[in-house]
Image 1 (tube, rainbow, N blue to C red):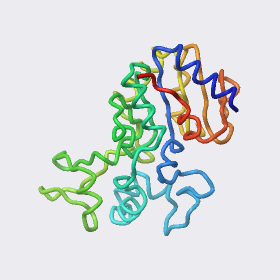
Image 2 (image 1 turned 180 degrees about the vertical axis):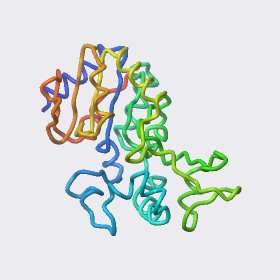
Image 3 (image 1 turned 45 degrees about the vertical axis):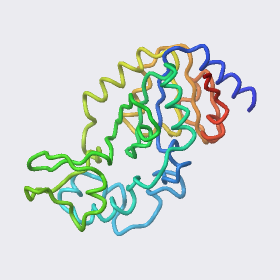
Length: 242
């Protein structure tokens, strides 16, 4: 494992345009549960399956029940960035990391200081009235009683991509551009099973493809380096030159 870490550090050192592509595993070390592990949200028992609750149809037809789950399980405001978020922000400041492409909706990359973050599935930090499009922050939504309402009376919807909804085209285009221009791609904390997001890594044609995940993925054979360990253990060893 030490040899793999050293190779990873060497790749970072010689790269000038790094893109980081992350999934739920990036935030689990901050205490935020993922979706698909044995302790993840999809394996917990609710009145309705989480996949159904987090769909556009369910939101429209059973908004109150949606918000019970959403407020209970997707509130990331009290969580803090972990070492991976922090080191990525530092690498961006040094001009190494040019973009972060994330499947997460928790806003922890920005909280750590990262500026260029493409959120494929949206963010809990942004919420809009479905009638007048007025913006509301996450605190307003999570502290509201029942269904959060706008001053105009309209229902507020989180700016997160629910099942049955498409990804934001501009976000996808920006992510693809970043991937195409990168000379190193770090894919971490994702099983790469969620499409279309996971398919985006095929746009990378650079020099170093690194996969960091606790378990194997279907893309392992394409990678130049595969590290099956916790992200925290890996990134705590990444040195940021002053």
